[in-house]
Length: 253
Ligand SMILES: NC(=O)c1ccc[n+]([C@@H]2O[C@H](COP(=O)([O-])OP(=O)(O)OC[C@H]3O[C@@H](n4cnc5c(N)ncnc54)[C@H](OP(=O)(O)O)[C@@H]3O)[C@@H](O)[C@H]2O)c1
Image (cartoon, rainbow, N blue to C red; front, side, top):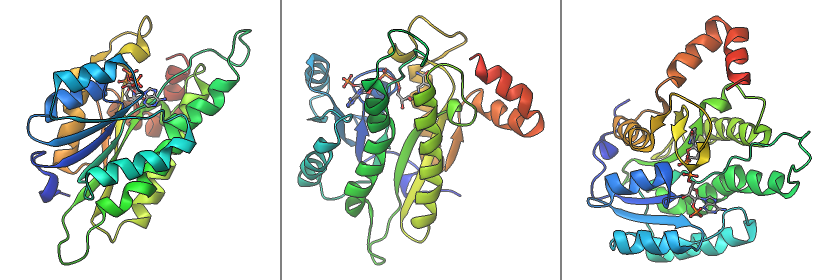
C-alpha cells in the first residue's frame, strides 16, 4: 500500500531514539535538513556533539533502560510538539555473553529488556495521542520499530537481545491490529548485520550504517509495513522452504 502522506519524508515531525551513533545517527544525517527531528539518547558528550553538529535537531536526554524516566521524557516531547508524524524506535543494546560465561552480567537482563522492548511499548503508548488524528484532519503517521533478522531466528549468543527482538515483532503485529482503523501505521524494518559499534570486532559481510539508514527511510516512504533489508529477505524465504537449514545458519551467526 502506498502511504501517500509519508511518501516523502520532508516537513515531518520525527522522534528518533538512539540518534547519537550507528544507524540512528545516519538517519539523522539523512533527514535533519528537511524535517523537524527530536532525538532521544543518554546524556553524554555524544548528545552534546549531535546538538552542535545539527543545531535544528532537538535533543532529549533519557536513559531508556530506566522505566521511571519514560513518562517524564514523553511529556517533554509532547510539550515540544503535540503532533508527531513518525516515531522511530531505534535505540537498543546487544549484550553478547552467554548464561554460562563466568562474567555474565545479571543486571544486563533487565536493562536490555527495558531498553529494547519495554521502552518501545511505553513510548508507543505515551506518544500515541500525538500520532493519532481525528477523522476530519486525518493524515498518515507511523510508528517504525527497528528490528533484526534475529527476531525471526535467534543465534546462540545474545539470548536476551534475540528475545527482545522476537517480542518486538509480536508486539508490532498486535499493535498494528489495534490501530488498523486509525491513521497510525505500525512498520518494522528488519536489518541484517550492520557495521556499527554494536557489532564492532565481530561478524562479516556487514552493510554500512548509511546503507541501513537509507533502506529504512526508503521503506517508510514506500509505506512498507514489513521492510526486510538485505539478507533478511532471503532468510524469510529460507525459513519457509528449509527452516532447519535457516535456523542452523542463524544459530552460528
Ligand atoms: N548493528 C547491527 O548489526 C544491527 C542489526 C540488526 C538490527 N540492529 C538494530 O538497529 C538499531 C540501531 O543499532 P546500531 O547498530 O546503530 O547501534 P549503536 O551504534 O550501538 O547505537 C545505539 C543507539 O542507542 C542509544 N542507546 C543505547 N543505550 C541507550 C539507553 N539506555 N537509553 C537511550 N538510548 C540508548 C545509543 O545512544 P547513547 O549511547 O548515546 O545513549 C545509540 O544512539 C537497534 O535497534 C539494533 O537492534 C542493528
